[in-house]
Length: 97
Image 1 (cartoon, helix red, strand yellow):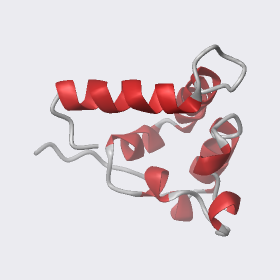
Image 2: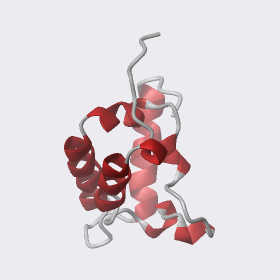
Image 3: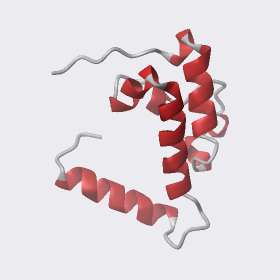
Image 4: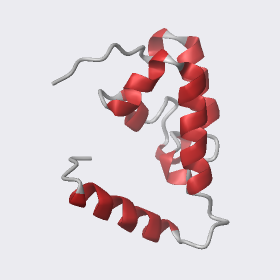
């Protein structure tokens, strides 16, 4: 397995701010407040491919913002359809997440 250096949001104000800014358009279910938490969601804090983006906070912010725009409730697909497509693609790609 390849090892990639990451910068935890807890150790970098720049990374934490990029995550917060990038996730503004995310569905409400992704928010910490929705789960009664006051921290960044685990999805961005774990040892995943997402964490590798922490080396370039500006790119991380824009990448997250793009996902938020793609999940917009103003688009013709419903949230459950987005999730079904994502799950199907992950399964076809034999991806564990």
